[in-house]
Image (cartoon, rainbow, N blue to C red; front, side, top):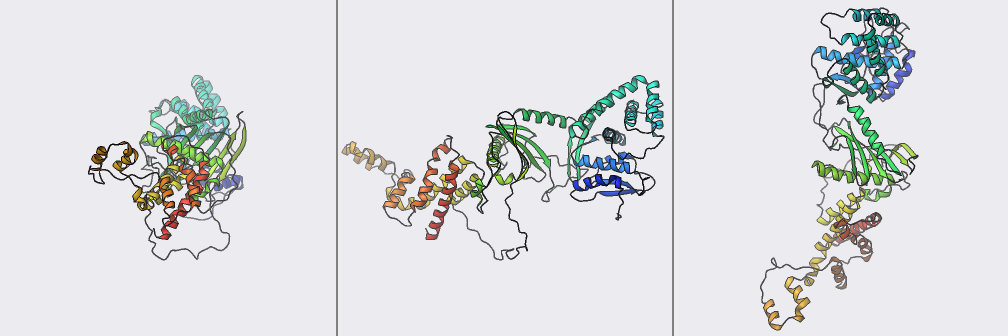
Length: 581
């Protein structure tokens, strides 16, 4: 491969700079031709993993810079997600048909846009095309004449030299067929060819009009990045448009709309999913991940997207939430993640909670219990709109960044790069495991799960540390029965019950509630003592334990109590460990 400086004529410099910006400042591969162009305009539509641009060696106005301008527009449309026609047929003829259809649609798009500068036209091209229409070669497809008549219509629109006269002649000799081709051309021209859905509709219309089986054709959406493309049916983009319209019709009023990309793929088909007032439109985006074990190529496609680790795809989600939600937050983040719940604005908190309800439903429907829950940190780049009760947009934020990062504009901090010792981490006790789980669910605004895990952590802590010191207050079934009903029994009955021999395994001791145990522990002045300042913060959350366990409603303001209670239980456990208990 040779490399060197390439001249770009000033007439196409603005377009070239747009292309460079779209490629994040990189330059596409440049193919320079001198005398003969590289196999015509259709060469742009051959499968390619990288953006390539054909440029002439002639630096003067005589160079065909109009073709370069069209080549740039083709690359820009492809990078913007406009798909290209492909075929499942494997013969050269099949591939050629798909390339010709795709190239013609691209030509029509350029002609419709009156793209400047114009290419350097070949003067006799229109007359040669007319000759092929009037005298098609032996053995040619029956659809070839129709296709060439459509091309002639496009040449006339593009002001190609001689096209007007050639079109008039075809109308004189073949009036009916020319009118049919004009009707097809006009219908294609009416589509928005610079959009994915418009190009897809035009391709489907043209393939059907030419008499081909549409099942042998599909669309490839490529961004000219290795491994990044999607193969779609001819109807996909139109159906997606209809799906978006349906999603739009489900908008709650007042309501809030958010759009974000998850760091993983939801293992479901693209579509609309609803749960408890939250409505999500899920689509998938191909990604490149260096950890991926399989690398796509032209000969091998990675078809499955059902990988929630985000190796090959990530899900893009548009979400409707009821109510007018706030997108601003004034509270700075803390180093402790579960304390950052108010560092994220209300809309992000509600979005995480609503999406997690949908994810729970998807786990049940798909059997995929490995779908992770989201936390606000997953929703780092968000678009947001707020609609009032009349459906009017009252707030619009095209892009908001909620990444919580530290930045340093001075000299790099490199003094603490490595931990030079071997770090041996102590295993967590069961109460600590539950408390850490509660912190995660606080971060995800899952109040019910956070209350359950926190309550379990506190109860397990009491069971492991307080209960063993209160063995004398434990009662088995017999003792409990006698303490309650003994004064009502006869002497003979008491003697008979007392004579019953049962092992501790058959009739284990039962202990009173943790609150009674703590009162007994305090009254007995046992060590280490449990500070009342911690219990005062823990008890308000424990009051919701049964509500959480039995599915009863829980107020959202419990989240504030959860944060301070979690910190209190953390401190209590730490003090207990420091005491050596």
